[in-house]
Image (cartoon, rainbow, N blue to C red; front, top):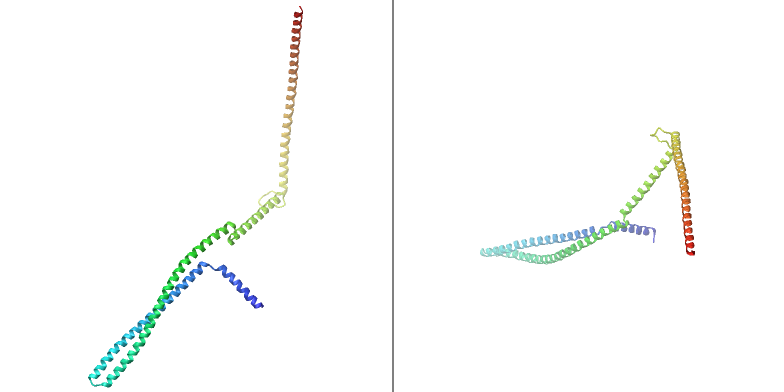
Length: 279
């Protein structure tokens, strides 16, 4: 395949692809329907012209027939006046008119036959157009339903051109937002570190460091206070635990003495019982 042939084939392929994407079946159907309607109008105009021509021939035939009667009357009048030559001339004109009438009748008959054919074709074309119109409306309804379903499917899946554009716009917005957030965080960090100066504040980096030192000293002072309070609580808790231990020891000693006294009483009772049994 030559270079020009390949280029021509490529151009035709591209054009065909563009036309296929741009073609709207509903518009094509409507255009075809209008074309058929135009054809019907052409048939109707042709039929009207044919009928008009036939009417003109019929009018001319009527006039010739009137002339035939006139020439008959002329021939009779000439014979009454013994003018055979005039009668011959009148009859010759009559004969010529009769021949013209015969030709016109043939033409009229041909036009009537053509008219009948055109009327039949017109009727067939009307039926065809009506069938096509019904089919066209059905196809348009199916196409519009399929198109709507396709749009919904594309919207749900996000594969349509418009939805893809929306998706890309969302991605760009997210990227831009993240970029702005990162930039804002960086600016805040640099401002806090004193690298950047706040143009709307009278404090400089030294003031901010002094303020931070004062804040640290205040925190340390509060911590010392808490440590002192915590130490006092621990001392008081220790004394309470020692007193509890002493009391517990005393209670334990009292309990042991009472037990020993009861045991001694039991021993004495047993000794008395043994002496009584021996006596």
